[in-house]
Image (cartoon, rainbow, N blue to C red):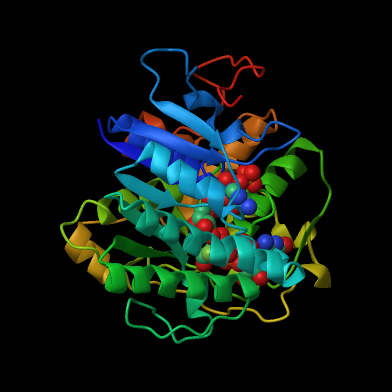
Length: 361
Ligand code: NAP
Ligand code: G4F
C-alpha cells in the first residue's frame, strides 16, 4: 500500500487531498497542530480510529517550525509521497506577521527538504507554490513568467519555490512546485474573499448579518474549485520525471464581479449590503492573476470543469445550508452531475465522532 504524508491536512486543500488519497487506496498520514480546541472539522468525516485494524488515516502532532519533529516524522513514516500544504496562507495576515510567515511558509519547506535528504528515504515531494509569487508580472502567467512578489507571504513562497528547485537539482530529489491559482470551496477559510462573501450572502439571507465589509474590489483573481486542483497535485507526483506546473482555470473575474454574482444568485442587490473598509486593503495589492495552464493540460491531461460562476453557486448553496436555509439548488445539482461522492461539503457525516479519541494521544 502506498503511503502519503500530508501537512496542512486540517486546511482546505489538505482535507480534500486526504480524501482523494484515501479514495485511491493510500495510507495517509497527516500533520496537525496542537490546539486547545478541536481543529479537525474539515477531516472529521474521514477520521478513522487508529485502533481499527483497517485504519488508513493517521494523525501526528507537529509544527512546521520544529525541524527535529519533522525529521522524525519523515524517518518514521517513510512516505512514498509528501504533499506539503501547511503554511500561514493568508496574504493580509502576512503583512502583520512577516517574520512568522517567513518561518512557517518559507523555512518550513527547507526543514522538510533537509529531513528527506538526511533520512535518505526515496520519496516524492510536492510544494504548494502559489500564483501570488507572480505579483505584478504581466498576465496570463505560466511556468516561464518571472516572479515579482508583492507580500511577505509571496516572498516566503518564492524562497520555498527556489529551495524546492535547488534540492531537485543539487540532490536529485523528486521535488516539484505546483504553482496554483486561487481555488475555493465550501471548506475555504471564512476570512478569504470567496468564502467571506458566500457566507455573508447566506447570513444576510438568514437575517443573521446586515452588512458585508470588504476591501479592494478591483483586483482580478483566477478562481477554480479545490477538489479539481488536488487532483492536479496528485497527477504531478505520478510522472516519471519531476517538473513544475501552473494550475488555474484561465478565467479571472474582478472581486466586484464575484461579489455581484454571489448576491444576485441569492436574489440580492450587492450594493445594498456591501461596504468598503480600509482595514481589508493590502499595503501592496496584486491586481491581476490569470493562469496559462496549457502545460498542465498537455502533460497532465488536467482540465477544470468549474470556473467562477458555477463555483459561486456551489459555495452559496453550501453556506445557505449551513445557515439553516434551503439552498437554491443549482450548485448542488452541478456537483451531482459533474462529480463523485468525495466532493461533498458536509463534514462529520460518515461518523459521529468521539471527540475524546481522535488517535493523537
Ligand atoms: P489553509 O486552509 O490556510 O490551510 C493551511 C494549513 O496549514 C492548515 O492545516 C494549518 O493548520 C496548517 N498550518 C499553518 N501553520 C502551521 C504550522 N506552524 N505548523 C503546522 N501546520 C500549520 O490553506 P489552503 O487554502 O488549504 O492552502 C494549502 C496550501 O496551498 C498552503 O501552503 C497555501 O499557501 C497554498 N496555496 C493555496 C492556494 C489557494 O487558493 N487555496 C493557492 C496557491 C497556494 P491549522 O488548521 O491548525 O490552522
Ligand atoms: O481571498 P484572498 O485573501 O486571497 P489571495 O490574497 O488571492 O490569496 C489566496 O490565493 C493565493 C493564490 O493566488 C494563495 F496563495 C493564498 O494562500 C490565498 O489562498 O483575496 C483575494 C482578493 C485580493 O485582491 C484582496 O485584496 O480579494 C481582495 N479582497 C477584497 N476584500 C479581500 C477582501 N480579501 C479578503 N481576504 N478579505 C476581504 O475583505
